[in-house]
Length: 179
Image (cartoon, rainbow, N blue to C red):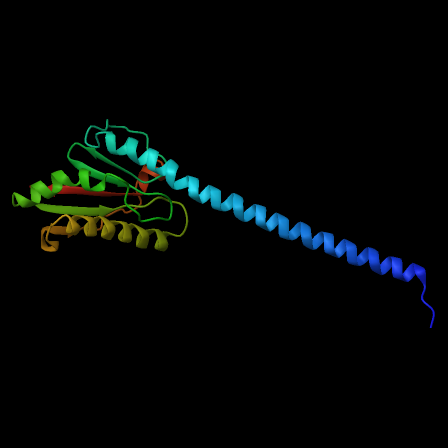
């Protein structure tokens, strides 16, 4: 049996190329994981700074016509508590309990609260309607957590759940006190 030197060189080059490719894959995976984890670790810190700023801002003093971003927010306008939601989410914004304080006081004084959910025009209408319902239920749960009895809260499906305004403004739940 004779060995061809060209075949050996070719096999060695293939093995070395494969080994280098494998090392590059491992190194890029490790770097990617480290970058991803650092991004996750820094995101809560940045969110905490934004949260602290939001906690220091008076929720009830929001001006009418406030610009709503694609993030969750809560605004009190003319006695109506408006919860705005991020796309595809039903998470309440920071400051929800503070914004609901006037509703809790009104219910304690014998009034009834009414919750209505709206959605935007993006995506499937049936999914959006269900999401609007889930958002309204999230607000109901917040009220219940603040001590409001469920029989003091009415969930009302609006005649038109597709709201006007920008998509960010349309994705909302409104809470009002009935007379």
